[in-house]
Image (cartoon, rainbow over all chains, first blue to last red; front, side, top):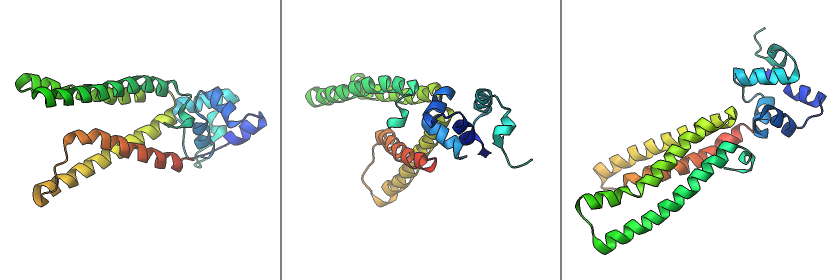
Length: 65
Length: 135
C-alpha cells in the first residue's frame, strides 16, 4: 500500500530511527512501512495517524478511492 | 538474531531463556552419555535418563512460543512466524523424503531428535531470505 510516511517524516526532520523510537518499533519496521512492503495492523496505523496528527486515509492510500 | 533486533526486549528475554537451557542441555547430554557408558542402566531408570536431554529442548521450544507472544513489534513478529513456517515446512519435507528412503531404499536411520535442530537451521536460513525480501 502506498503511503506518505517518508514525506511526513522528512517534514519533521526525523530519521528512520527517530520515527521507530516514537512508534516503539524497530528501524527495520519503519523501513518496510515506508517502502510499502509491509502494511501495518489497524492499531499501528492508528498510532502512526495519531503521531502525525492526521487521519489514516490521508497517510495511507489503498488505491481504491 | 542480528543487530537490528538488539533493542527488542522480547529477544533479550528469549536469549535469557535460551542460553541457560542450552547450557543445561550440554551438561545433561554429557552426564547422560557418561551414565549410559558407565552403568548401562535399564528399565524405568533408563527411560528417565533418556528423557532428561529432551527437557531443556522442550524448554527452548516453549521459549520460542513465548517470544512470539512477547514480541511487541508486529512486523518483526510476522517475519519470525514466516521463518518458523519455513522451518516447519522444510522439516516435514525432509522427514517425509527420508522416511521413504529408509523404508524402501535402506537409507541409514535418521533419529527423530534431529527434527528440532533441523527446524532451527531451516528457520535460521529462512530468516535471512525473509529479511532480505523486506529490505
